[in-house]
Image (cartoon, rainbow, N blue to C red; front, top):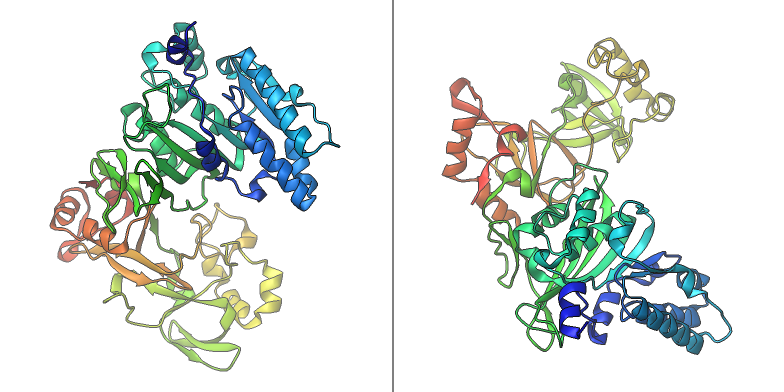
Amino acid sequence: MNEKIEIKHQGKVYTPRWIAEIMINQFSNTDLKNARIMDPGVGSGNLLVPLARRLALKFRETRDKGYLKSLSELHAIDIDGDALQVLHDRLKQSIRQLLPTYTFDFSKHILHANILDQLRGQKENSFDVVISNPPYVKYSNIPLEDKSKILAAKFKLFTRQSDLYIAFFEFAINSLKVGGKLSFITPSSWLRSAYGLDLRNYLMKAPTQFSKGNLLALYDFADHQVFEKAITYPAICCIKKIKYDQKRETPKVYLYDGKSFSQKNCLGIDGGKWFINSKPNVLKISNYKVNDLFDIVSGIETSANSIFITKKSRDADNNCRECVFNGRTFLIEKPLLKKILKLSVLKDGKDTHDRFIIYPHDRDGNLLEESFLREKYPKGYEYLLLNKRILEQRYKGIISEKDWYTINPIKTLKFYNGPQVVTPEMAKYPKFQIVDLTDSLFTSGSLILARMPFPLEKILSIFNTDRMAEYIKETSQIFRESYYRYSKRYLGNYPIG
């Protein structure tokens, strides 16, 4: 098979050294210690060999045996047996030069196989690091037998028109442990093509499973060709697999000008396609619904606000505040009280009163043990105990009787510090505004959280529009005096763009 045909059908495009360095540098030293590492399309090792050298050099520098452990866990898969023999010889020679007194059996983790034959028996959540330059094969050039194997694996990101490298993305993501990272160089077509939409959604949308992807870095070569014998426009991406409820980090994005990469402001979205935006504080969006780009978090609901929340209080001493509940004054320990904003009465981002809520939970929302509450905060506990009969009726049949004093057993309780965009639940017209939620909870409304880097003023410009007002009038409930409900149920389907 001549080289041109081999590139077309096997997708071999070998990685230049300078690109390999960028890809390897996506992993910190911590990522690479005590790590199981895999390249599922290894070829002759243009990525795995320099990565192994880095491990050996770090061990020589630090004498940390975590790097030796990683060297013994280098896993490689490729369909080309000759390339794998070259890989083995290169690994052996490179590490012998750097660590002459150590012996590694690299062959035990080198697998001569078609990765598509590994799909059904794939060990998921088992690797810390995956790095690869997977084969570049268009869907029309994938052999029918290989297409059948991919479809039989019931992949979620690979569609019937996907290029082969999308299957490698999914194989790698499935192989990663939660907290693990991958570094891939592939054609950049997944950023804009229809077949890349499911991969883009995995990296941006709210997950329906136990984990999700976090795009940490993107290096787009734009229209520059960096491979000598292949016409392709590649991009490097670094993805971290995180828990479904973990906050995504903002990706760092870079654009190549033919000589070097320069960092740009943000990742833009246009019609569902991604592009690197070079203009500050500009993010063009269209053809999305609010639910695609934002999380809408409703405020605290206690089903007994008059017992938990006070709008009239003052310092009594260093330890307690005098709080008025239902016309009666009680001493409540200060650590048991948290500030809370009532979004329905905000004006210019400020509440009309200094409100406090009795918060018998820790910072992560976990309910404090009753014995701890009684011993640590006796005054607050005594007050709650006076209202036990009412409180235990709220969620009868839903929670254990011992949790009678919880604020809400159904909703996740969480702090969202810093400036945030919020809306009252009931309003005559859009009243989205920016408030400072530092050390504060909120009620009677919702918080708008962007999943990607949006300037807060940009969010306001999306939501505070006549178009939003007309949409809510058409879809939401109407209440007395022409008030409408601005809740997740109605906001989520609002079309953007």
